[in-house]
Length: 157
Image (cartoon, rainbow, N blue to C red; front, top):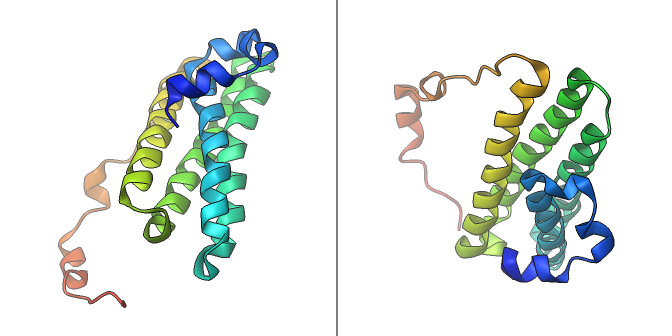
C-alpha cells in the first residue's frame, strides 16, 4: 500500500482533525496501519512471534505520543511527548531491522525509510517547541577500528 492510496481511505473524522495538518502525524498514522500487517507476518513465523507485539506497540506509540503532545499547552510539555515519539520511532526502526529476514529487504527498506522520515521531522520540531537544540551525537563516536573485529564473524544460517 502506498501513502497516497492510504490517504484516500482515511475517514473524514480523522481527515478534518487539526492535528492531521502535521505531516509527522500523518506519516505515523500510515506507519501504524502498515505495521499491523507487518506484525501479522512476524507473528506467523515462530522465530519472530515475540517481535510482532514489540513492533506494533512501538510504532503505535509514535502517533499516540504525537497526538498527546499536540494537545499540551506549553512548548516544554509538547516537546516531552514529541521526544517520547522520537524514542518510539527509533525503537520501531530497531524492531524492523530485527524482523528483516522474515519481512524481506524491500519491505524493511520501505519501513525504515518512513520511520527515518518521522525521526527527521521530530528532530526538527522538538527544538522549536523546547526553544533549544537537540544535540545528536556525531556518528564518528559510534564508529571505530574496533568494529573490524566483527567483519569476519560468520552469521548462522
